[in-house]
Amino acid sequence: MKPFKLSSFWWLAILASHGWAFTLLQVLQTYPQLSALNTLVNSNANATALTALLVNANNFTFLAPSNTAISTFNSQNPGLLNSTLLLPTIQYGLLKGQYPTVLITNTPQFIQSNLSGPAYANVTGGQVVELVTASDGTPEFISGNRSISKNAAADVVCAGGIVHIIDTVLSIPLPLVQEITNAGLNDFVAILSADNYLAANATYVNQVLDLPDVTYFMPNSASALAVAQQLAKNSSAAELEANFQYYVVPEFAAYSSMLTNGMKLKTQQGTDLTVTLQDGDIYINSAKILISDLIVSNGVGHVLDDLLNRFDTAGPPPPTSSSTPSTPTPTAQNPAQSSMNMAAASTGGGMGTGAKIGLGVGVGIAGLLILSALLFFLVRHRKQSQVVADNAPWDNSSMSGATASPLNKFYVQRGQVQRQEDPGLGLQSTGMQHFEDSPPVGTALGRKESIRESSSKFVQIDGPTIPPRSPSRVQRGDGKSYF
Ligand SMILES: *[C@@H]1O[C@H](CO)[C@@H](O)[C@H](O)[C@H]1NC(C)=O
Ligand SMILES: *[C@@H]1O[C@H](CO)[C@@H](O)[C@H](O)[C@H]1NC(C)=O
Ligand SMILES: *[C@@H]1O[C@H](CO)[C@@H](O)[C@H](O)[C@H]1NC(C)=O
Ligand SMILES: *[C@@H]1O[C@H](CO)[C@@H](O)[C@H](O)[C@H]1NC(C)=O
Ligand SMILES: *[C@@H]1O[C@H](CO)[C@@H](O)[C@H](O)[C@H]1NC(C)=O
Ligand SMILES: *[C@@H]1O[C@H](CO)[C@@H](O)[C@H](O)[C@H]1NC(C)=O
Ligand SMILES: *[C@@H]1O[C@H](CO)[C@@H](O)[C@H](O)[C@H]1NC(C)=O
Ligand SMILES: *[C@@H]1O[C@H](CO)[C@@H](O)[C@H](O)[C@H]1NC(C)=O
Figure: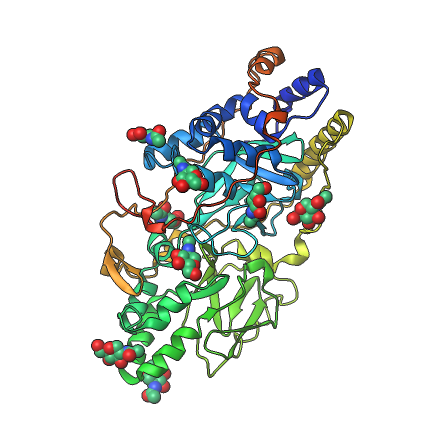
């Protein structure tokens, strides 16, 4: 299952025979596992803009979906990737900065991509992808609905950056209401309903859905629902509004890696939330984060085990004597661990976000060869010495809470509950966890001839822009809107 194989380096022979470094576009044109992506780019109505983006890219990590990833995605979402969704999907895979396998650790990193703009991402600086290693040490690229992509081939080096070929197409994060539905946060939906937040006159709900760079806290448990039902009975409309706004942090997309012990987060309501890191868990006031980092189109959401009380910002009860407060580690009584534990366990991370390899454009062939050899040995060394992280994956049971709610047939849209006609509503890219073998096939000469165009042809083309496009115009193949 090691994604890193000596046979991954067949392309070095091509580089050597050329005497110059491939551009990202040329990697697409020559790498057998990327032929489907290359075909999509060339046949797209905006092929010129797409190729310009790929040719001009610099200082990047590109997450390129393999042939298998694309065929799986196409079978679940026919007609999307060959039309309007290709450009945003490629932009989302084009990460800023260089992240070879050795720099992906059990401390999650949230890396900004080229995807930005009101059509797909109200996130300043670009929508993020989470980079983290799984418990077996393999890198994971986590996107919308915590969809996990893994390497089909890692660390393909080209001019200006690094390509990871991934086995699952990245899932572009959807607006909060769709992400809630897709993730199956049934108790949270029931809480929204119980406290009148889905009523048409609750305009303050719409308001925070349209802000950029927001953090949402989402209580999702049967006990939280029971209290929320009580609150609905004994609270005024103004109190309910203030309660709602206390779960929303504007102007700060607080990914778990940014949450530090004792941090205060200023809410939309006006008062603060307190962050506590304890026993490997993150608490918001006294509520524990069950699932962290649900990336949404305008920020991030974290699922809590309890309601928040704005009149009591105290943290959780202090740790018991048997636990080790100064060294956060995942605890046995918390099966619903998500990757946020690794953020808390920052003392265990070997390499920090800042430790990046500075590859420049036009790096010479000799440099590439040395770097590749270095990466190879670094990876081998790291795989052998890595402490296996107790980093349990996305936990299904914790998402849906204790009881199944009939409301899971509904979702919230612009403050109103709508019937969810299609349970697969939204982008899907789950299911495939398939490792393709690195392609040892073919000769360098054969692939060299498949380079159709030289990079110089594209250098003058302007970069693409996301067209102003009504989200509702993006349709599934069956005509259902998913935005
Ligand atoms: C995209 O593929 C679908 C079949 O999956 C096809 O019906 C449609 O015409 C294609 N669209 C374009 C623009 O090629
Ligand atoms: C191509 O780009 C134009 C404008 O930039 C946009 O209106 C159109 O939807 C795009 N077409 C596809 C297939 O992406
Ligand atoms: C590459 O990008 C990263 C992340 O955006 C940035 O921190 C770094 O300074 C850049 N390096 C170069 C050489 O531009
Ligand atoms: C995406 O790339 C294009 C072309 O290089 C650039 O103009 C644009 O600023 C980038 N967008 C983001 C959000 O980085
Ligand atoms: C971005 O925000 C604007 C309002 O500022 C909203 O109309 C649009 O739907 C948002 N886009 C996404 C993808 O959330
Ligand atoms: C989102 O992820 C959850 C948990 O893995 C899964 O049960 C659900 O089917 C996913 N939803 C979509 C629409 O992919
Ligand atoms: C309303 O009910 C909740 C939940 O039972 C309780 O905590 C709160 O004190 C009550 N508020 C008032 C004003 O009675
Ligand atoms: C919304 O309308 C309901 C009655 O339909 C009312 O009880 C509630 O107070 C109103 N909420 C707001 C915020 O005006």
